[in-house]
Image (cartoon, rainbow, N blue to C red; front, side, top):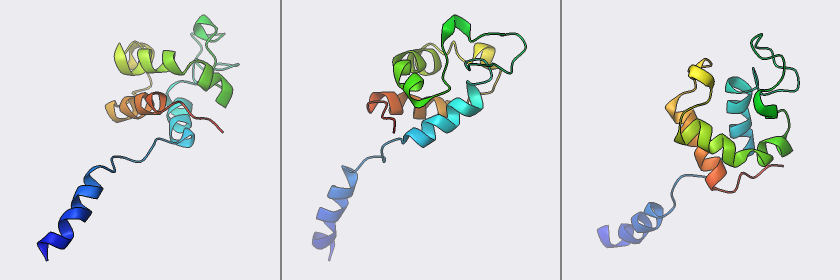
Length: 105
């Protein structure tokens, strides 16, 4: 019986995590980034999006994907002072989304 299960177990070990969807990445950006990085920021400290980086649309997220990865997942400079309380899991998910090609609809 174990011999029959071994190929299945080996096959499942190579499956890895499912790809991160745009919807998952979008939800994090909506919660943690849009307060400042929007056409009309809601954070009073930023009347316009810092450095012109807006993340309102899928195409803008795609355009700034590498920057999102570096600032949120590599050097942790965003969110600024982590004012929106981005979690480590959210940072990892955004990094995977970018590493997987930052696919958008």
